[in-house]
Length: 99
Image (cartoon, rainbow, N blue to C red; front, side, top):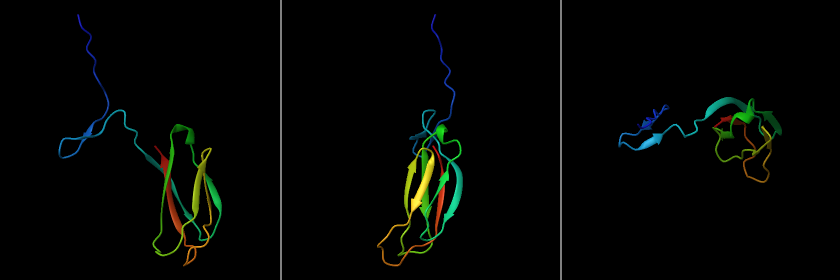
């Protein structure tokens, strides 16, 4: 007598039939967004940071300017101004979350 195993989860395939996501793939979630004012320093604590790895992405609509230096430590995303880039600092939007 054998034992049957029923696998539960999700699998997503692309149009060519290649597996893109399965039960072992981590999916990300967005926690929030914040505007980082030009030339500022600051930090934001990520809620529930112990539930996954922190990720972030930044964007600005003003090219040829510099964005802040960003670091992640102990559930907190911090930023400081970046110096020495022609054009000066620019307001930056950061979106962040967990995966």
